Length: 453
Image 1 (cartoon, rainbow, N blue to C red):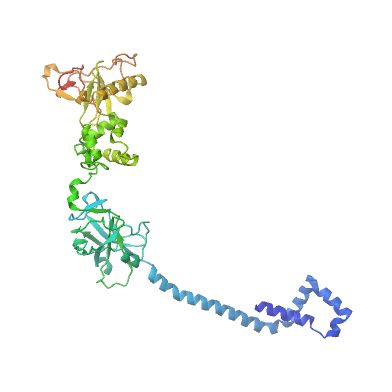
Image 2: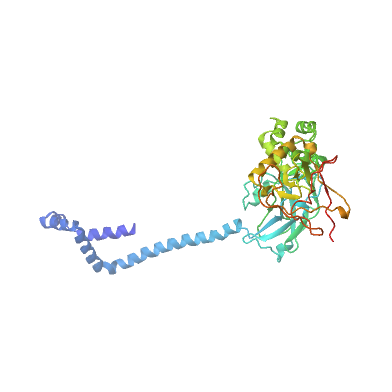
């Protein structure tokens, strides 16, 4: 706006004159010349040289006014900035160390996963370093129950108001949700949650889950904003339901209803029991031997998603080291693990890993395995017979490429040499194998290897 005023003054000075002079032919020619850009630039330069001493105070005043306005705006925003930082920035935060289990039970002490102690730490909000000194490192911390839907998007920050609005209180006529030591003291920035438990389940709120929260005690007078700690969400069930809880991981001897999606005395439990499947080991064996038959047994009432959840849970089971055998009519012994997965073959006095067989030999083993699965009662535990020292058998060679001893197959290489008496028995995943298949009432059995010299 001020620059426009200067240019207007220049224009008025240049074209100023009386009306008669402006109407004359010479004046018209001058105006025509003035309309050319080069002439305007020349006149402007001449005018600035002539009138610069007069314009300088005016320009100085305009510049001072503009600079003053900019400084006022800058100072005003600078005054507001510390206030914004004071209310929004968080230099410190509380954190839970470790996650809580997916399910807790009323009356049981709250612990982290794998029975580890639950701890709260005070850290720097920027670099996560533990705060071990200063007034905040020895403050009291209050434990609270939060709605499971709070901070569902796992944001790194939340406001004090959001935290307070998510606190869950006990139902009318009930005891406080948390009992025990709900106020703990930081020691060098660390505090252990020693003795708290839930008095009510979480099924009555919309999310059906709780979170555990921790904040600086309201009794502590602190000026710093310390962000509250928020745990992962979890279910809280009544203590009497603990006897029906699922095991993670399940054990082989666990009842089959310990698996996910199979309820005790429910429809699926009864169907499995009618088919002779009572334990997790029974379930896994049938899963290996006839997966589609097992799936069909449970029927359409179990959705594919439920089936996948049950199978995934069952496969968490830790297997034992027992071996089982099946004696075929061809002098070949199939070796199985505890859930009837084929893991090896014994031919004569030689042991072979399934992976070491040729394609032709694998095809024969698969056929024998299918025969074994048709008669699972013939798959028996692999036992070792005791014998006198003078009857010690030849120890098998370590697993390797299949030898010519496998019947019905073309030669695949040289025959392995037996070890001598007193030499170590075969190393690898297989036990000492029998020199021949000797079926009996207890199934295939093997003489014991000789004692070391």
